[in-house]
Length: 144
Image 1 (cartoon, rainbow, N blue to C red):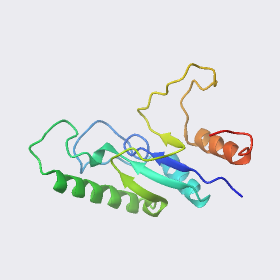
Image 2: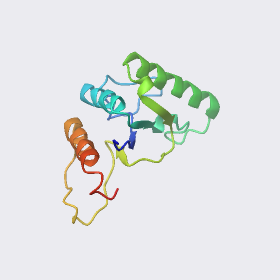
Image 3: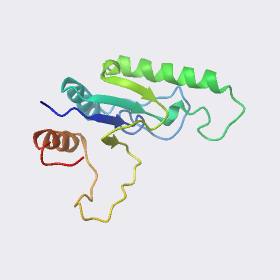
């Protein structure tokens, strides 16, 4: 039986280009290797989740806005973008909060560690797929 994992993707800078905050309606072009990775992981049966601060109604502390309206509009904009690029159905969850996952794919993450695990570099889409494939193939030897 294949190991199926919960894999959490960030949105800006991971699935789409990000040139700094320009409002909830301004979403960059797709990063195609990552879009392809989402499709491949979904086809393999992994449970993919999208976590984005775009759903935070106060990205820069502006409390003069209607939180519910902004959150709903932001989510609709993200859903439309995902649908337009053929990956909406790949995600089981779209949230502004950090959901459970075995892997978190984020362009702004800092990974804590003392170096004993040998991981000291960033990963691109092929690296991520290779890591997940390795874990699937060696599930009995790896403690996740």
